[in-house]
Length: 277
Ligand code: 6GU
Image (cartoon, rainbow, N blue to C red):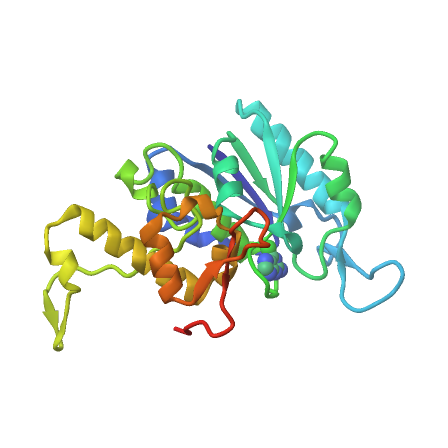
């Protein structure tokens, strides 16, 4: 996979040399190119922003540098044999970045990132490139960052770990919170390793039992406990068909019950007197 990042803070992308992404690069699984947007400015002050039409606070990133930068980077990539680029524009006003989108992006050969600083990039830039390639405006959460560079690191890491051969063990994806499968839509519960006793704290007995069925059940119960506590919205969104008899017992203990008026039928919701974690 080829990645291009155009930014006014190339140093901010240094972490792409570290850890999982750094190793994927070193192994040739990821071909990363970071470009300084100011390389496409032609005035003394290397201006990349200007005041917004219609007035208001803050500054808007100009069309000129972005258009010239993206054209050059695209031409260089095509020249090097890259194909089918997708443009990713991190912005707090984008669609939520999800595991589903990470999987979709991991299947593309070429991602081009355009992180904005200031109040964002002139709309015409996204409209222009959308005529040539998929454009994804994405937000990484409900808070505001000073710029999209940290989001580029987030998206890159989420995507890179899905590439074939990047994680050592293919099984490592299986139980990811948000991965499709048996634990679909539930958060992972707690995990433990040696020593068996630490500062007087021991390991839940079931995990030492060697009984695979009981261990799987315990993990499922803990996932339900954690999800109801931290992300009740995920439980409400679950297809009730995904809950077996034991799940339903656990959910009832946690204060959740099927809603006879739920859509689809029997969707779970928290009883008014439900237990809080
Ligand atoms: Cl992608 N950019 C900025 N500036 N703030 C954000 C964000 C992105 N996602 C959440 N907040």
